[in-house]
Image (cartoon, rainbow, N blue to C red; front, side, top):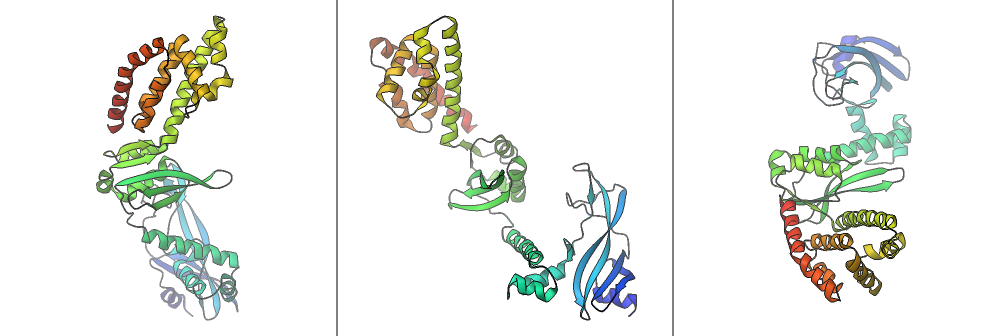
Length: 356
């Protein structure tokens, strides 16, 4: 059979058969070469760069059988510098799927839809694990097509979930109105959420009204860059954690001052043993007594507690009543009145800052 006839039978665009490497009873190896010059598409970013060719390698891929023989194609692939990440990347060919042609992967998918992976592998002469990887990649591509274009939520929540040990994460985007996950992706961080916003496009990103997050810097940065009209909402748990961390910092500073001045009473109240009593949100008698004593002898701790309550006022109005319950004596009551105005102003400034 002439090489020109084999080229027409293969029907691979822009490639022709230049040499028959192996021809046996069960195998046929063919060397391909470009029939005309075509620009190389970078496998890293998907763009065409005008950088010079770094090197040319050969990749062996399997194609559909011909005359009862397994066909292997020796495909030359160029390597060039990618200007996006400044690294050497191999060119991408749209008719290949890993080490198989796209039509061979299609046949594997058709076989696995009517039989098991093991039987499909026996028929094609492949290991069942290889059949599983080809079938999985095909299913992932079909899932991506169904999710494209990505549905644009008006109110969304984003968070990462650990699905396996050793820090394997997946990022989920939840449509709050529909109450379901509309998009997810492996890994976490700014680049992952940016891929979601880029899939939406600028117009749909502008329609997003609110984004709920756990306060991760990557998520906040990506949202501020792409969804500029969206209100960023932090979840209740992480807001309380940040407030408790701030109060604990004030506690440590005041404890260090008390130890330097030999103020044993204040040092005993601010000891780490009393830390969790101070941080808890539940109203208990021990907490009331502790804060009552701190209100009489230490202003900074008492101010920090009022700041925490004023900020939590924007999340849950009932929390604002807690500081009033802490004050029993006349001196503490006067202190409560003195900070009531600053508490309200802090809450209003917090709301204005968040909405901006």
